Image (cartoon, rainbow, N blue to C red; front, side):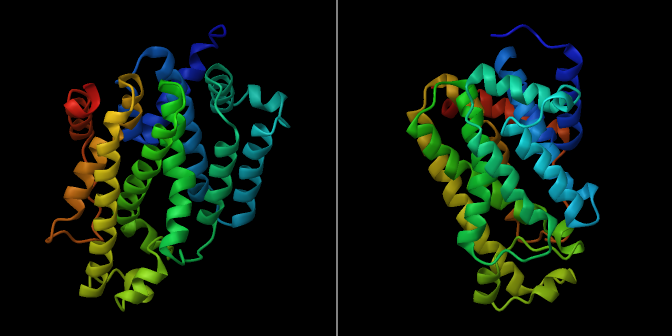
Length: 286
């Protein structure tokens, strides 16, 4: 390992993550210190990318921010990177854990979709988006925890699809209010669900059918991911602890009486409890 960076950069990443992505922050509490620091950097980087959408009113400033990160990962940003705590910690994690840069750059590229109000066209397009974002984070986290393997990559794809679809459903109130649609148009058309009804916040039987289909697909990916955990060394499994939260989220999202346009975030205490139980379950310890 390299010499320790000033602790304020680590604290900055932890505070950023705790404020903007508490579930992933909480998941880092169950891993050893060195790996936790790298996970904090990885997840804080993701927060920086995801929240660009909320920090700009037009796509161009967002594209410029994304380009800075792309240049950083390509080695074209030098002095200014030292003043950015997330960039400094991310570069350290890349160096210390030999993380591949390509999936990080692809994650940035994929989130350019967030800057525009183009609807997600197909299920294949959504899966591609989630594979490059949610699945990539699982795969990189697994590389931090243990040597890379095909088994971990395979598991990461299914884990990311399960988590990502659950987030698409949970984020529907916010996305609809911004007239942004991550529900695939292909699935909406299959169930005769109008985009304008979604944007208007109408809880229709057609929308319920769309959400039921997506929930079912997420549950299948989750079941596959959990079944693959046994193929991983025990050291790698904490990277997939968020699957415990995905399982709880999907159970909550599948409740028949739930209004899909009413946000229902889990409490921080519930999040910690769910992760603690998962960390002690046979899936993650045997």
